[in-house]
Image (cartoon, rainbow, N blue to C red; front, side, top):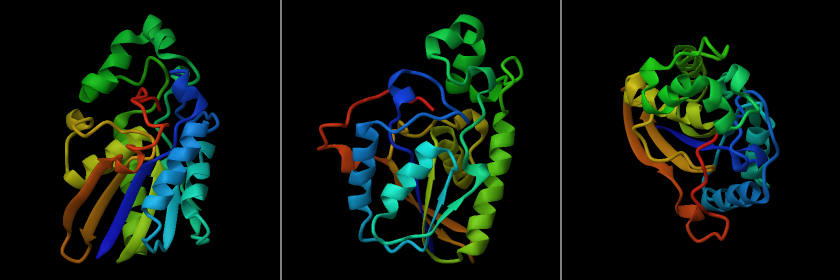
Length: 218
C-alpha cells in the first residue's frame, strides 16, 4: 500500500500582502515557519522514504522543516511548481481586478471558464497534465510505503481532483487550502483503489496562536 501525504507550503510574506506568487517567490513568515514545525511534529511518527517538493523556495524551505532530523531525501520536481500566473505574479488581488476581473474571478468561481491567455498565464489543462506526469512518476517509483509532497494551493487541488477523477469545474470542491494543511491518500497501486483518509486537515494548527483564516493566496 502506498501512502501519499500532501501539503501546501507555509504562509509567506506575499500571502499576507495578498500578492499572487505563482512561479515567483517570497520568504516564509514566522507563522509559516511555525506552522511547518507544527506539521512536522504531527507527522514525526511516520517513516517517509522520500519527500517530493516544488523547487520554489517557499515549498523547499517548508520541506526542509518537515524532513526534520531524519535526513529524508528531498526530490525537486518542476511539475510541482504552482500554476504560472503570468502578468498577475507579484501583483495584489485589487491590482489584478482592475484589469482582469472576469478572468481572475473565474479561476476561483468557475474554473472551466478560466482564460489564461489575456495575462499570459498557464492553462489549468497544462497544470493537470504536469500533475499527472509527476504523480505517475511517484507511483511508479514508490509502489508502497510513505511519501510526502510539498507544493502549492492550485497543485494541491489538482492532485486531489486527479485522484477523485473530478472535472476542472469541481477543482475547488474541497476544504480551504490553508498553508501546511495535510491530505492523506492511501493507494492500492496493484488494484488501482484509492482511500482518501484525510483532506486539507489543519488539526495540528488549531491550538497554535499563529493559526488564523488567511486569504488563499498562491
